[in-house]
Amino acid sequence: MARRLTVKDLLDQRGKHQFAMLRVETLAEAEAAEKAGVELLSVPPAMILDRQFRDAAPTAFAFPGDNFYEIGDTADFLRWAFPLFKHGADGFYCSGSLQTVKAMADHGLPVCGHVGLIPSKATWTGGFKAVGKTIDSAIRVYEQCRALEAAGAFAVEIEVVPHAITKAIAERTGLFLISMGAGGAGHAQYLFSDDVLGQNPGHVPRHARQYADLGAEYARLQQMRIAAMTEFAAEVHGGAYPAPAHLVEADPSVVEEFRAWLDLNP
Image (tube, rainbow, N blue to C red; front, side):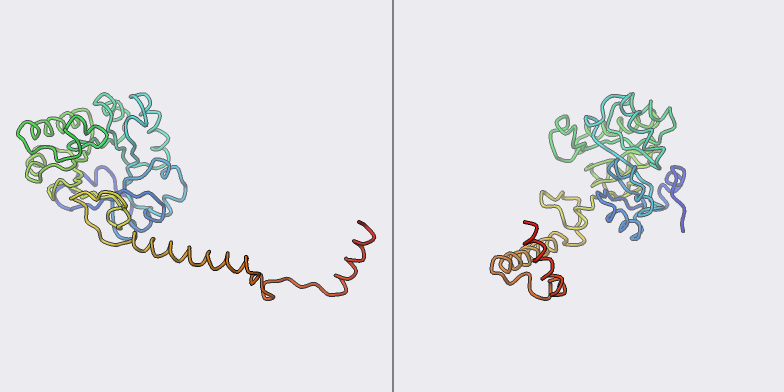
């Protein structure tokens, strides 16, 4: 079996190998990604603490992540990260401050920052739209990358940034760039399993690509559930269930003796 990737592996392979990355929400998705050859996984923090995770995805480079407002300040981030690192987290998504990134990196924790469209901070960039289409915003994205690198981050998720801007940044930074809708110059391409599997009931981002239609399959299965339960309820209400084939029989003499006992012991 192949070994787990390290931070050094990712940095050494910048520009030599294009990595695949998915956000997974269940152990079944993690196992499928592992078997499919997806090297990098973004996971809910609780999944790292589940002993079954490494059975499902033994070689995946796993980034637990949550929004900064779910975790707190710098001290909270450190308290959050240490147990996850102990249980096998390989890197940490951090949308907190540069101070937080530096504190985590100073403790030897591999940190991945976030630039471009950051959903939890989209109010600062005008909502859910591309970032970096103007000279000022492109410079801002680059400056944020440089600041994260200086703070000790080894990677950055660069989200919904024009691909030519991403390419120019990749040529001038030592960061491992994780592209979500930011083009092929990123060193990894990142999507959500819900979009890849076609099980996202809401808005599907422009950069996402659907490779299966599990949503339709789930709808078909739900109709099968309803049909089976409807038939069950109808048979119960009509007396057809339970039928003789579903009953446990007792010897008639035992039943007779039991009834006689009940008559004597009301």
